[in-house]
Image 1 (cartoon, rainbow, N blue to C red):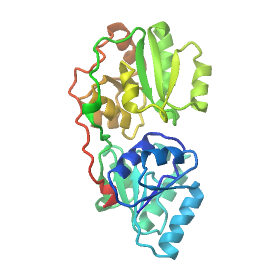
Image 2 (image 1 turned 120 degrees about the horizontal axis):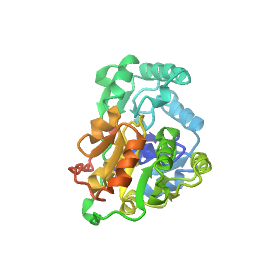
Image 3 (image 1 turned 180 degrees about the horizontal axis):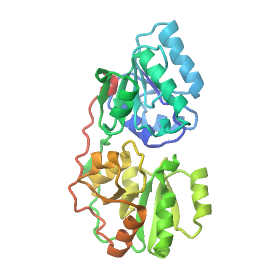
Image 4 (image 1 turned 45 degrees about the vertical axis):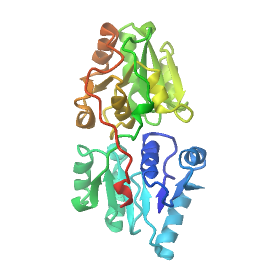
Length: 322
C-alpha cells in the first residue's frame, strides 16, 4: 500500500483526515510519501508506517515508475484530488470544488477530468452536496465514487466535562490557517463594527504563516493568538475555547467542527450546503458574520452545547483501502 500525502504542504484538515484513515489500517504495512516539513509529524502520528520524505514531483514519478514500469500490484491512495493519468489501482479523496472554481480553476478541472477518466480511479468523497454534482459534470461514473465519514475517531472517555460558564473575555475558537477561504476577515470586521474588541479573544488553531500575518496587519486591534496545531492536540484546543466559529462558505467538510460537535463545543456557522449537510442539528446558523458575532457578544451563550452531540466515529478499516 502506498499512501501519497506529498501534495500537502501544511498539517491542515486534509492531513489529519488522512492520518485518521491510515490509522484504520492497524498493523498492515503501508508506505507514506510526505514532504520534508510534514515528515516528522507523520512519523510521530504513524509510528508503524514507512515514512518517506519526498517532493510532489518526485512522488508522482515514483508512483508512475512503480505502477507502470514495474507493474506493481500495490494500491495507491492519494488523500488529495490529484489522480495520476493512466495509473491503475488508484484511489483519491475529493473534498470540495473550491480549487476548481472560476477561470483560474478551469485548467485544473480539465487536468483532473483527464486523469480521473484515464486512470479509472476510485474517488472517496467527504460530502455529497458539493462533490456529487461536480464529479457528475466531470463524467465520473457513480459506481467509482464512495463516501467515507470525516468524523474523527476519538475516545470520549478521555475528555473532561465542559463548564457552561464562558470566559471573560469570550474565547472564540477558529480552526485552520491554510486557506483564505476561512474568511476570518469577515469575522474581525464584524467585531470592529460591533465595537466589542475587548469582549472577545480569538484563538486560531493552525500555524503562523503569511495569511495570519496579513490578518494581524489588517486588524491590529483584534486580540488574536495562534495555537500551533503541530504541538497542541485538537481536544486540548477545544478545552480552551468557549465556542467554535466559522465564516467559511466553501468548506468540503470541516473536520475539527465534527470533533467539536462530538465534544459538546457550541458551533456558530454561516449557512452553506456542506455545513447544513453535516451540522444541521448540531450548530446555530447565521446569514452573515455580523449577525453571528452580535449574537455571541450580546447573549453570551453557554459554553457547552444544548444541541444534540454528534456521534463520534468508530475506528474501522477505511473504504479508501478496499
